[in-house]
Length: 248
View 1: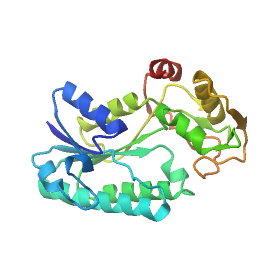
View 2: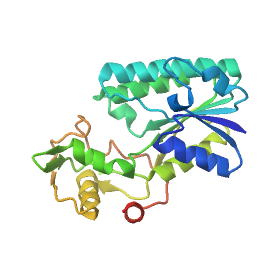
View 3: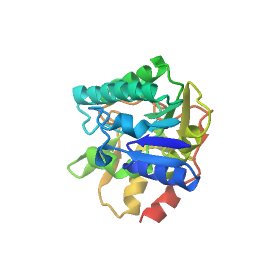
View 4: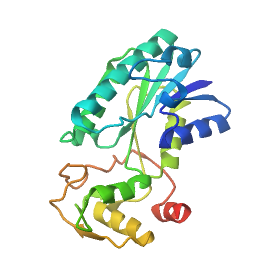
């Protein structure tokens, strides 16, 4: 089966392409690096020839409100139009658990816009909403650091390894379209401040993590369960300590 992975050179995309190839599929990594640009449409028609499935794991290079909305709306419209012309039978998109609850952020408003375009399209689809990745723990810490202190709310979070994200997306991609949303998450729940504290300690990072109910997460004021999936979510198997040990 030919499966085109949009964003195929990124963190999730590169892992997904490798997993699909190991399973015997013709997986094509499509990104600006390979001459495929979903914003301009360049290279799309050629890349999608003969494709049964298209998986979109691309991300906006900018999180500025207008730029991120333009990216997801324009690239998704271009991609869906090219898929319709090529006769693609399944569109799979990676999204984020809690997107509909995080609309204070322009990024998540753009992700909802992307999801709505997919739902309105004639192409059978599956939207995979994943929780935060272990790989972004340091980035969350850096974004929240001020005067060597990291203030984070004690909201629940159920993060997962990028390898588990890629495996979950791959399983959906080779199956029938669900024409709906599937949630995936990690095997453990943490408090957000606890997760970052533990991740930094493993790297001997001296920054102090402060539990602060008023602190924001990517500019969003969180309540208790906005970042955790539903009980019906499919869970990965890689635990945070296991991932930390491998990535050390």
